[in-house]
Amino acid sequence: MTASNPGGQDGSATGAGSATSSRDPDPPGLEHSIARLLSIGIYVSMALLAAGVLLMLLNGIGPLSGGPVFDLRRLVPDLAALRPAGFLWLGLLAVVATPTARVAASLIGYARRGERAMAIVAVLILIVIAMSVALAQALRG
Image 1 (cartoon, rainbow, N blue to C red):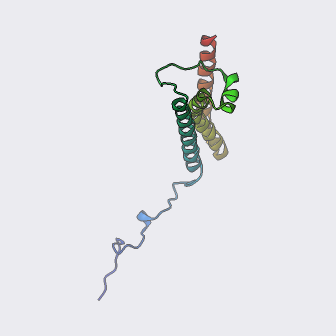
Image 2: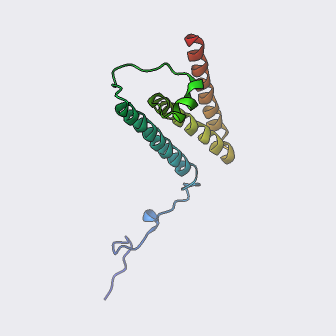
Image 3: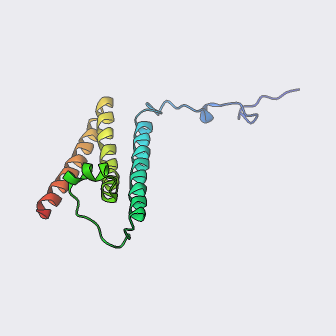
C-alpha cells in the first residue's frame, strides 16, 4: 500500500520550492547585468592599482613617499610611459566611476521597465554625484 506525498518529501518539486516565481518579473535581467558591471569594475580597478604598486616597487618608490597631484592631461602619457602614477590614478578613477556606472545602468533598466519613481531616484543620485564633482573642482581651483 502506498500513501500519497502531499508535502513533496521525496524530493519532488512543489509549488513552494520551485525555482521560478511569478513575483520576479526579470530574474536574470537588470540585477544580473548590474552585478556583472560591478564585478568587472572591481577587477579592472584592482588590476590597475596592482600594476601601479608593482611599478612603484620596480622603480624604488616607497608607498609613503607621497605622490603626484592628479592631472587628467598626464594620465595617457603616464600610462604610455609605464609610470606608476598613471596606473594608480586610472585605478582610483575606476574605483570611483564603478558605482556611478551602476547608478546609470540602473537608470536605463528602470526606464526600460517603466519604473518611473526608481528612474527619478537614479537621476537624482546622478545629479548629486555631478554636483559633488563640480564642487570638488571649484574648491580645487
